Length: 409
Picture 1 (tube, rainbow, N blue to C red):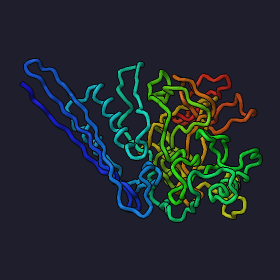
Picture 2 (picture 1 turned 180 degrees about the vertical axis):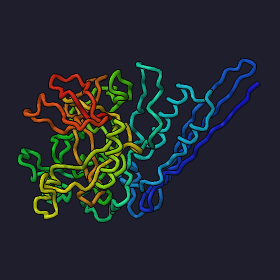
Picture 3 (picture 1 turned 135 degrees about the vertical axis):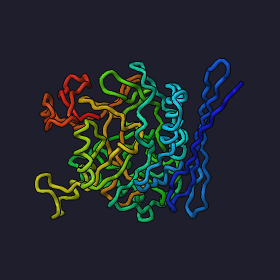
Picture 4 (picture 1 turned 90 degrees about the vertical axis):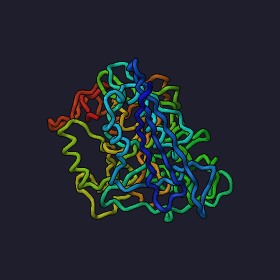
C-alpha cells in the first residue's frame, strides 16, 4: 500500500517590462510511504521553462543574462523556503534537502546560465546536508530603496558587424574601454579589450566594459564574457574551520570568469545600519563598491569625503539574496581577484562586482579572495584591526603571509 504526499512550488521570475524573456520554474516533491514496510521514498523534480517575448531587439542565440535585468529588493521570493518549513520531518532528510538545494540553484539560474556546469554540494565534515536555507539563490542584482534603476537604453552600443575588432579605431566599445584604462597609473598593453581570444581577463585592476544589448556585434565577440555565464566547474564543500567554501572541480586558467558577486545593491545609510547588526552576530556579506576608477573620477567632485578623497555610494549585500560567491572564503594569498564590470548599466557608480581567477587554479583547490583587497608588501604580517565585534575572527587561510584575523563570513 502506498500513501503519497505532494509538495509543489511554482514561481515566475519577476522580469521587468523591458526583459525579452519570461521564466517559469517549478520544484515538485513526492513523498511516498510504503506500507507495511514504513519506508519513505522521496522524489525531487525541478523544471524550468522560458519563452522569448516579442521584441525589437532580441537575439535568440544569446542567453537571457545578456540583458542584465535587475529587480526590486522587496519582496524576495520565499515560496521554496515556506514549502520546506511546512514539510514533515520524514521528508526533510539530508538527501532530500541537498537535492532541493541543488534543484533550486538550477531553477533560479536556468535563464542566465543555461549551459553552466551543475554546482555540486559535498560535506565530509559533519551531517549538515547543505548551506542554510536563509537566502534566495540568484545571479541578478536586486536594487534596494533609494537606488536608481538601470536604463539599458542609455548605454551606447557599437555598430560592428560580426565580432568586434579589438584594434578598431571606430568601435564604440573599444574606445570606451581605452578611455577608462588610461585612468590607471600604468596600463601597459591594455589597449583594446581586456579579454583575450579565450575569454580570459588579461589585466586586473581596470574597469571592464563589455559589449551590451544595444551593440550589433555577434554573440561570438570576445568582449562578451560575464554575460554568457559561468563556464568553470565548481562545488560547495563544507570545510573544517571556515564553514562552506567554493572549490574548483577542474583546472581553472588565470583570468577565467568565476562569478558575479550578486545580491542587494544598497545605499550607504542602509549598508551602515545592516553592518552594525552583522558585526554583532559575527557574519557579514557586505561588499563596498570602492573601485579605483571611481576614486579617480571623484577627484574633481567637491562632495567627497576629506579623509578618503571620494564618496562611497553603494554596497552589495549578499545575505538575503546571492549566489555561490557568497561562500568564497578569505585568503591572505588569494587565487581570485575582483574586477568591476559594466554590461547594460549606464550609471558609472553601479558596476557589477565580478570574481576572476588571479592565477591558474588546480582541480580540488579552494577558491578564495582577499577580504582586505590587494595586499601590498608593507601590509604583510600586519594583523587586521577590529573593534572587538564578533565579525572579527581568527584567519584560517593557512597562507605564509597570513594576517591572523579577518572579517568572518
